[in-house]
Image (cartoon, rainbow, N blue to C red; front, top):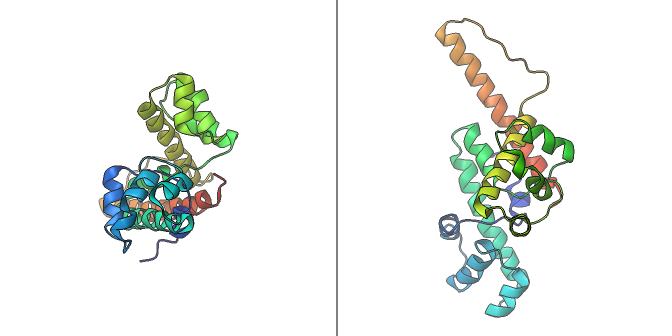
Length: 205
C-alpha cells in the first residue's frame, strides 16, 4: 500500500533506533549476519559509520547502504502499522529534523513543557545541535530532554497538519452524522500528516 511518503528519503536521515526496533527491522531485511553487530553500533549506539566500518573491516559505502536499508524497514513497518494519526505523529517525530525559530515557538507554546527546557530544545530542533551534546552542556537528563524534544516536534506536526482556515465549533448532530464528520477529519488529517512527513524528509539535518 502506498503511503504517499518517500520512505527512501526519510531513511537517509541519520536517526537512531532502540534495540528492539533494530532487531525488528534487521530481521525483515536480507542483510547477512556479518553486518548485524556493526549496524547495531551505528543505528543504536550512534557511532560514526566510518569508524565502525574501519573497526569491523567493512566497506564504508556498503555499511551506509545497509544502515539505510534497516532504517527503511523500520519506517515502512511503522507507517504500515499506523492505525491513527497519533501513531503517525509519533513515528515522524522520532526523526531528527530541524524547524524554523517561528515554527519552534509556535509548537513549544502549545506544549506543557516547562521553560527550563526551552533553550535546550531550541538548540536541538532549530540549530541542529546533537541532543547528547546539549544534554551534557546543560546538565539536563538525556531521556527527559529527548522526550520533550519529541513532544515539540510532534506539536509542530500537529500545527502543520491542521489547516489555518479550519474552525473549531460545537454542534449537536445525530450520531451517524457525527461519525461521518469525524471520519472525514481523520482521513484529511492523516493525509496532511503524510505531506508533513514528506516536508520533513527534505529538511536539512
